[in-house]
Image 1 (cartoon, helix red, strand yellow):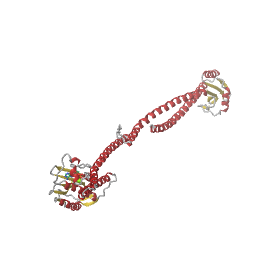
Image 2 (cartoon, rainbow, N blue to C red; image 1 turned 90 degrees about the horizontal axis):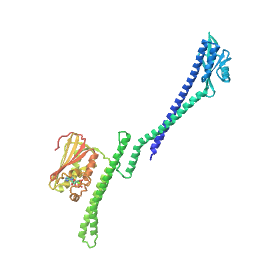
Image 3 (cartoon, rainbow, N blue to C red; image 1 turned 120 degrees about the vertical axis):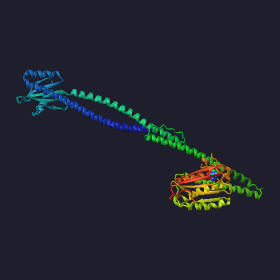
Image 4 (cartoon, rainbow, N blue to C red; image 1 turned 90 degrees about the vertical axis):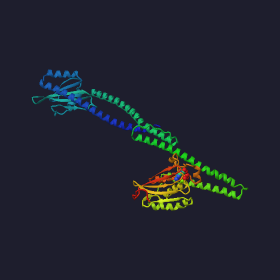
Length: 465
Ligand SMILES: Nc1ncnc2c1ncn2[C@@H]1O[C@H](COP(=O)(O)OP(=O)(O)O)[C@@H](O)[C@H]1O
Ligand SMILES: [Mg+2]
């Protein structure tokens, strides 16, 4: 469960530890060097001090006094003459002092110099300062300091570093553990949420704070959950209505087929039932065809192939195709379009739109009434209006007629061969063209279906014709 926070934490830890180690190491080295230099400088300054006193009064009493002072202090002194012969010494350091004095060359600057600086190996560090009286070297002041005190100091420093180091590693671990948890908790929540989603539980509610990438991701998941929930609900409803739509014709087919197969049945009767079965099968065929049409449009791959089309010519063809059906019902179909507007449409699909709308106008109108097709331009948009003088749509039903399977009067639609999918298909196609469709209607008086298509190459004002 906590894998990501562990990985993240480990990564942080390795990096921070690396940085801390480098910083601590360099701090340590600098500090040690500074302290040791200080020791050397102090020792040299002390030697130079003695030398200054001796230059002022080079008498045995002063020499003794200096030696005595040093035997009390942590440091030690050895005073030699100009040849390097030891005159005075403060403590039991003679063997070591002799070695150092023998080794030291005679070109010693007046400011003094370090003659033994290996504090790590040797037991003493040492400096020398020359005594000069009247421009002539009179002797040398050698200073010694035991390295044990330096080692001691270094040990204390090491101890300090160790304590601080352990403390900072501990603090680092705590901080990283906390931070990686804070960062990964939202991620883990989202992971759990998506797991729930994939199991079909859409009741995912993520608390999203802020505007950063994580919050955006959270919001995206939330939206996804809502969409999925909606889609699932819609799909269930759709499937329910399909099975409902198929149930009626199937019941008919089954029932009439059962009667028609009785051997005692008159030939005339059998023909009647068979023709009902045929009609029902035809209805189902149409339903399946429409469903297939809708299913195709639901896919993301649904593509319309637009081509520039002279609208009037196009509508004229539709008019010619539909005219006989209107004549058969003793109705008139009027078509008004005389300006040449070019629209970009998928001709085959747009013909389907016009046929569906004209089919409705025909189906839901009385004999002898008129249906008209009008075209006009409005603010660079092309408006196509199909109006009838038919039964109209009650106000309460008007907002729903573009929904799948929605019919104001089920039995009337059905006897006219309707599936309730026509307007849903029309709406999908028009919207795929970037257009829109709406209906206005007065119950008992008639209906107008208005399609708006974007763009149109000719500016025409008002209704034409
Ligand atoms: N021109 C119209 N006049 C009156 N009612 C209409 C008209 N067009 C559509 N309707 C109503 O809208 C419903 C949905 O139309 P549609 O999707 O084409 O389904 P169908 O025609 O198969 O019933 C119809 O059942 C009808 O009640
Ligand atoms: Mg229809």
